Image (cartoon, rainbow, N blue to C red; front, side):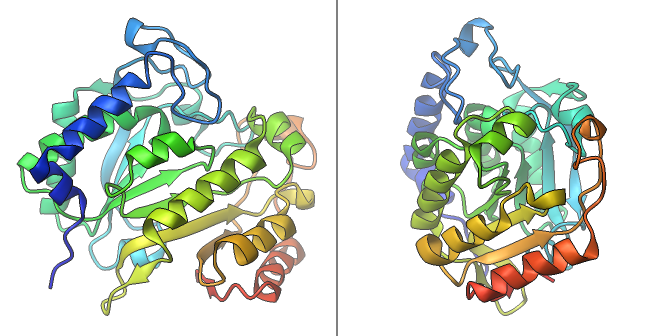
Length: 302
């Protein structure tokens, strides 16, 4: 039987519209993410993410470079949002996240994009850096439901999430995919401009797992629901891999599906921040994998 996302039921009862209203209300004194900037985005003010009440995207389409349970045979239906609530000095998509590359679209158009990705055979709708666009996404989701959207919704974020915003998404998001970046607040502040990142990210992980549990993969190898954690290994141990893996194993679940990523390369302003001015070594990556396994984390992406 084909999986049907639970957001369909919320749409049918009108609850999805109520969630959308609650999300828009959070823009009046914006606290969508961990920054809690407090600006009135509905009046055109902008905070750290530099977004107002409009939505910009840089690209969209089937994507085959994601984790295998998301890609399957037909691809993950990705929508790349312009802007980000993090200011990573090493961002590999800095032209999108930091420089504003993209075009403004309406929520109705975004809904049509979602529906078209399903029609193209994509296994899910993969929202990339969605945190600052939650109200617009929910408005678009309603429009997409009108067109028959039912495939899983993936929330592909940087981990600096507000628990209260996540609660609005309870029963809407099927797969949470946070990139958990740092174990130490001084590194998060210096390299991504995010104070208290470890505390905020840990609370967010707990809430995500409470909502969706461990990643469920069907008989065809396709992810349907659950938590999928990414962790980018940084040079010199700056990501704090040991602390993060211990937290996940002890306070989330040893059955957490984790992608420990080796593709770090110095981009954007990384060369100004040694040791981020170099790639990671094979030893650093192997050590990260061993750390995870020693914590009993056995569902590591390949």
